[in-house]
Image (tube, rainbow, N blue to C red):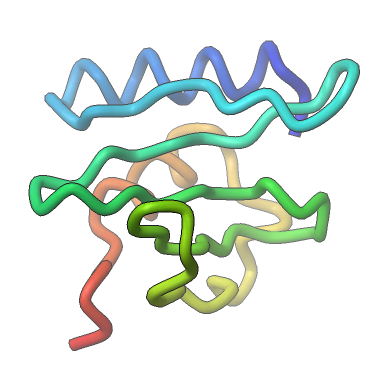
Length: 92
């Protein structure tokens, strides 16, 4: 996603008390980094593919993922915020 879109989504996530940060991934591209309470982090939309999905990392190693959310390629920013805030990072 474009950096300005990521910044708006991060601001809305922070309003919900989600530990969210912009993760630069290119010249004008960015993803969203979510810090999880157990020390892991979820990196949303850092691969440039259409739609929302996340890689879950711990100490720089891939430990899980949130699969691509169907229909998320056409989500509004508010829908993206809702999807990220409600994601199951444990795969349960």
